[in-house]
Length: 475
RNA sequence: UCCUCCUUAGCUCAGUUGGUUAGAGCAUCUGACUGUUAAUCAGAGGGUCGUUGGUUCAAGUCCAACAGGGGGAGCCA
Image 1: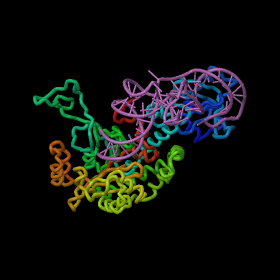
Image 2: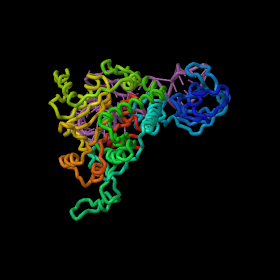
Image 3: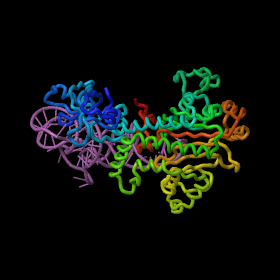
């Protein structure tokens, strides 16, 4: 048995081959478009309907699984270069055309989301998931070739001090009748771990420990947020890439993030040409039905090259506020949230203006006010800002959030006190500052947001195999 | 969680100022045709108009609540 991908790449003309796959369409009682998932391309299998039994012909329906053997020849028709002249054909699995939901026609993304177990058999989702796989490989390739070690952060965590959002509780207690303390609170001492535990919202704190021993490390694993977020860019379960580097300051951190993103995008541009081309045309089709004003100026692969071929714009928070203050939409009071002054977080509309209108480029914002950022970010000499950085991308907003970490024990303790974080919970995290502390930095990159940007998919639920969102954990 | 829009055949959608028998394309079935490319041609079957309640002589159409979904916002990756 051979994959269609390898047959098309190295065609062995006039030889007998065997392939297995699923029927996309069956035309004229003669032409089977067979797809095996190895590539976007179907291979046309031509059957002689006068020789083939009527019973078999009837069973060649959209969605059926087939094993086909025959001679690989140059196609006699237009539209494809190769085809198989079928000698034997076996229906491995029937597909009742009356009931099979995926038809050879356009389906809405919403409908396919409800058929997540079958949607992979469409061109769009096949392309997206192959690109996703290639991106994941490129991530590992980049880090291993740049001296990073892959380490596995725990999925179950005992600290809820990370402050990255609502968490999912992990417990083996009977939810209907939990043991109570004399005070009437749930007694987690009797729970499996003897304390309250949750699914991780970030592997960063653990990654810091590993960076302070192995030098450069990264995690790439599932992350869980129990936020009631209903947007096209949020999931309750998503995959996050978190590198952490000893002896890196914020500038080195930003350099790394930029080079990393550019290199993984270059990898898919080089290795997923057909899938990207398909996704690009899909977007162009979609845009035809939109009003002119909403159409995107750049094609998908142009957008990717735009990111890989030029440096990201780096701007401090303070500079960004000045730009926004003087911007036309702010002066004309077009912003829903006018720029009040220094110190508040930027709204989506502000980030979008900077990225899509002002700079027309990916933007790295850094040196944010300390009050709006997490406790572990390193305080600058001005005492007001921290060495934080966010990378903003057109269309999807924040794709990276990172910082240089506070390495000074006293400063960190003071910050934790201010933000009411229990030192006892994070004793081990403080130990890292007690024993051989050093400047170090890292960031988190939302993998699905990267896949979204790369494939041009509008909704994050369409770039992860089985999306988990509020009120939805089907499959 | 808030704002807003949507829910009509298996799928995508049309359905007029409320009016009597709810339509189209694709898919399916029957037949014809056979080098097709979302094949073509002829015919057929297929509907609790999201659910519940209300207004009205009359509701797919108007109102309310609920459910599901989309888009935007917040939270963030």
